[in-house]
Every structure is written in C-alpha cells, then in structure tokens.
Image (cartoon, rainbow, N blue to C red; front, top):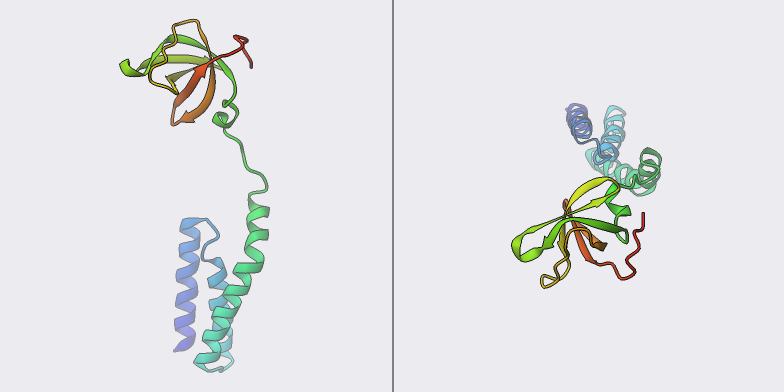
Length: 149
C-alpha cells in the first residue's frame, strides 16, 4: 500500500514539474522515489518519511543552484535596461498634464513623460532617459544637448 502512495506522490510531483517547468517539485519527486524504494525494501513508514524529507532537502539545497545556473546560464538583457542614461529626441511635445509626448530611441517611437510634471519639452528638444515604466520613457531635459546613442 505504501508503495502505491509513494508512487502516486512521485507521479503527481512529476506532473506538477512538467506543467510549471521551473525546477520546483523535481527535488521532492526524487525524495518520493527514495521513499518508494525504501517501501519496496520493507522499511517502516517513519524511515520512508525521513528519507523523503532528507533526500528532498539535500537535493533542493545542494543541486538546485547548480541546476538553475546550468539551465539558465546567463540573464538575457532586454532592450529597456540599456535605455536609462540615453539621450532621446522629442517627436511630440511632452506634457504630463496633457498626457502627451513621444520620443525616438534607437529608431523606435516611445511614449514619453517627464520626471517632473511642471517641465514641458517641445518637439525637437533633447532629453535624457532616467527610467522606464512599462512602455513609457521617463525623461529629464538633456543638460549637454548632445545626442548619445
């Protein structure tokens, strides 16, 4: 009976792992496998439970960081991370109070807003990106007036 319980737990955990694809339950499925083997060898329920928790914990603590690093070896930077600090040209008057403004960055037009509501930039002016909020560039007037790419 215990063999079937551990087998069911292991299958359930493997299904959850397959659905989530995030290395979340695979370690506990391995613990359930250890408990399943112990049950097949006739070990008591206490030994099975201890094996389940011990194997799960050891695998989770010691192998998960290695597996995560191996599966996702480097973080892929998105385009917005490189935008902070860049200078953009205003293509439509940026006025937070009127909810207007666009700017061109790397050949793409973005919605633009000023960091401070009382600052307005006219079309053709230069601004520096200080943040990105969703699909909006948050800008301050460019101090040096030089377009940086």
